[in-house]
Amino acid sequence: MPRSTIAHSSLAFSPCGIAGASVPHAIFTPAAIALPSIARGARVACGTDAPAIPHGRNAKELIALVERGMTPLQAIRAATTVAAELIDVDDRGRLEEGLLADIIAVDGNPLDDITATERVPFVMKGGTVYHRPDGV
Image (cartoon, rainbow, N blue to C red; front, top):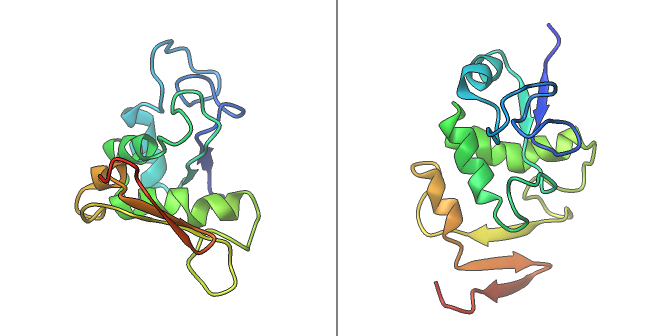
């Protein structure tokens, strides 16, 4: 059975997340469409070029994916392993020796509460740790 792919990207979707959809004020795929698609195995990837989510606020997209039926783990994978697979790169998307990786620390367990991904006290990029200036 062929698998569908849903990528939240301004290049691929209308403002409501489905090509050709006519709902003018929706930003993401409506749950009525997303839930069955996810249940059938649609591959969903988070993106950084969607105008609905400003750069640096990617956690909002993870929250929206969970609100539309994904588990927190599926949403995290949509931002990491699945995103890398769908853009056909194999040097990122996983924590593994020799691969490119930026790591975030979150306040809480995102598998229990996906909104924990909004609370990031530090980022590690290229082996250097960057703390939030406000200490949060």
